[in-house]
Every structure is written in structure tokens, then in C-alpha cells.
Length: 297
Length: 291
Image (cartoon, rainbow over all chains, first blue to last red; front, top):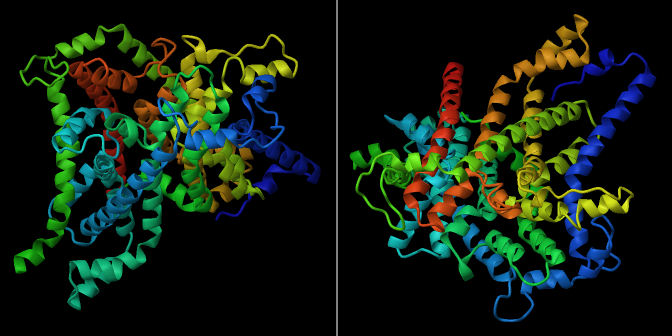
């Protein structure tokens, strides 16, 4: 961390200093309000009745804590046709995200290891192809992917979505792990090879144990990307197989006679909850992943 | 046995490489080829030439989508970078609550664009949202109906997009500021430079690589933006807030125009490539120089 040397130049008197500090905090506070208000509005709206929503305004606190809309958002209203709710789709997302994250992270780790510690001819080209793969607009692969899933007999299934997320997540996980392993000294691997350890032994006994930081970053990144995905879910699944973001969008768009903003907000919070919790618990790694995924090379 | 040992790294990479070659690069080639055919509901493999591209560029709807993309990208870029830099510089002033504030500035990034769109759709609701709030506190003629006004709904996507992504730009600029060498600032201080000129004349110019990364990420996000449009305006009212990504999925999966959809996808792909390829080239060159 850099020491702050600005105060001495910036501030000539103590009074002026206090004034600047107040302005600084004021601006930072206004921005904090800008970011936090939508979450506040979502939470208070989810606890209001529709009556209260129509009469009050969106910043008012709810008069009573009304859990009704949370129940409706999760279970539905109980009628069979056209009822929309999140429960089934939330679990679809869980069933999707767990295997997809594990597989793509492990493959990424072993790829990164092979690309940095066992250099071979053409490895930098392979890396370049992975790197470019993180940028492609998915519209350029949607049509052939949907045909391939059909040909494989796994269209509109969670298994199919797992495949899609592993395939396109692989570029990111390989990139993250490669960038991490390249900063680790080759000497460790060389020494182990002289001692007779092979490719997999070095990976499992030496590399994996020191990979915790990058594995956490990769898992969080993949979890967030897959949980929050809408494009793949909406394109490759429908009905009962859809993941949670697709179900949320369907709920909001559904054209029942009355709009239920309280239910929409409860549903949005439920759909955003897992990633929000991960962010609050492991924000440091979350940010590192974002920056690792962006400032490349 | 020796052969196996020697080629093990390659064998380990091979499945992933195969997947990459087939599902990424092979699929892109397939889409490029289909964009040169007459394909409608099903792919046809008879070569037709570049007529789909002519069709695409003669469609009003595509022009609306491209124009919206242009408006969105410019505003999204300027606002995110401006807010990002201001917040990063302010947070870099030894703020006591820095960790707490950073958490607040960044949490929207953890939410999906669908959640973001759902929340903002409610906040910007023309009757019960901000409008009602403003009227309740005394501005009785206040009107805010951008969400349902053709020509204005694209700006609501900017508002929600900036809210979701600007904190991230703050984070990468803050990381950049933290890596600036102390000595440079000390030297400038001795020369009598004030805080504003230290930042504008010395520190920000040093952040060129951070600017580059921020621009590439934001433009790339903008071109791919699909979820947020769907959740917030669904391209509406009418087609007034259409974007290329929405156009493509509409043509591909609702209008049975997969030749045309492929042509639009390839336009998106070429735009992204035109920005990313030079960026990656310069990044990799920098990495080589460091070695």
C-alpha cells in the first residue's frame, strides 16, 4: 500500500482539511446511496401488499412485514395452469451450477498447469486460442450449439446446459489458472521431475495444494457466470428445465391480469441471493477474479 | 511408454483443445458459412453469396439496433469510466470506511442483468416508480416515462447498465492507482504540483493500460448486451430499444431466418474482433517485453 502524501500539499490549514474531508465523504455518500437504493427498494417492495404499493411510494417502509409475496414467488399461488414460481428452477440452477463449476475448474487447472510447466511446441498458440475464446460474442455459436445439442439428444436438459457452460467456461478457467501458474517458479517442478515425479503426481501433490487462491477465484467466477446466465438458459431450455434467471424473467413478463411488483421483487432477490452471499463472504476473491479476467496477459 | 511420458502434456490438453476447436472456432466457421446461404428455418448448404448482408443492412430494424448499440456503448463507456475514476481517486485518499464503501459500490456486479433489469423496471415504472415518489415530495407535474417512450427507453438501459458495471471500473482503477510508485508523487510534490494536476497530468496518463482494459471490457459487454435489454424493455416499446444481440436471437429463434441471424452474429463477431485483436496483440507484446 502506498502512503498518502497528498494531505500535506493539499491542505494548508487544519480547517481547510476538515472541509475537504467533508466534501469527500459527501460525494462518496451520495454514490453509496445511488448504489444501495435499488436494493433497498427491492427489499421494502417485496414486503408490501399491492394495496400499499399503489398508495405509498417506492421509498416508504412497509407497514407490516408481509411474507405473502415471498411465498408466492417461491411456491406459486397453487393453481396448476399458468402458475409461475421459482422453486423448481432454483433447484435446476443448483443442479446445473455444481457440476459445471467443478468440471470446468478442474479442467482449467490442469490445462493451465500443462501450458505453463510442461511447455511444448505450439503451446502459446493454444493459449491464444483460449484467450480469444473468452471474448467471442455467443451469438456466433448459438445456432450450431442448439443443433449439436439436438443431435446429441440433450437439448432442453440440464445435462445439455452443463456441457454448454463447461465448454465456454473452459476458456476463462484455463486463462485464470495459466496466468497464476506462470507466476510460480519452474524450479519446484524441475526439482520434482529430477526426483522422478511424473506429470500427474506433480499436479496433485505439488501444484494443487498451492493453488487454493486461484481455485477460489475461478470457482467464484464460474459460479457467478453460470448462476447469472440468461442467454444459454433461454436459448437451450424451456418449461420445467429452465434455470432460475429464465424463470425470473418469465415471472416478470407473465401477463396475468394484475402486475404483482411485490412478488417480482421477492423473486428477484431470491434469484440474486446466492451470488450476493458469495460476494459478501468472499468479496476479495470476487474482485480479484474480475480483474484477473479483464487485465489479461 | 517413453512416448506416452513425453507427450502426456499434449494428451492432457488435447480434449480441451478439441472442444475449443469444435465448439468455438468450428461453430464460428459454421455460422460464417451459413451467413452466405439462403437458410431460413433449417440450414441449407448451397452457397448464395453475400446477399444476407445486403438484406441485413437494408433493414430498418437492424439500423435501429445498430444505432441503439452506438448510443448505449458511448454513454455506457463515458459514464462508467467517469464514475469509476472519480470513485477510485476519492477512495484512494485514505478513507476510513474504504472497505465498506467498496463493498457497496461493487455489489451490483454480483447480480445478474435479469435481476438488475427487474429491479430497475420497477424503479423506473412510469406510474408507481420514481415518478410517484417525486410527485409525493411535491413535484406534482414531474413525469418520468422513459421506459415506455420510444426513443427514450434505450437510456433506461444505460441507467441500469451503468449502475451494474461502474463499480467494477472503480475496482480496476483503484488497483491501478495502488500500483503507482510513491517516488513519482513525492517528486511532483517537491516541484510544487497540486493534487489536481498530480492526478490529471501525471497519474492518469500513467494509467493508459487500465484505460485500455476498461474500454475493451465495457465495449465488449455493450456489444454482447442481451439480458438487460430483455429484462428491462424487451427491445420495446415496439422495436425502439432493439440491440444487435436481441435482433440476432429474434431472427434465429422466432422468425426462422437463420441465414440473416448468422449474418448479424458475424457482424457482432467482427466488431468485437476489431477491438479485441489489437488489444490482445498489444497486451501480449507488453508481456513479452517484460520477460
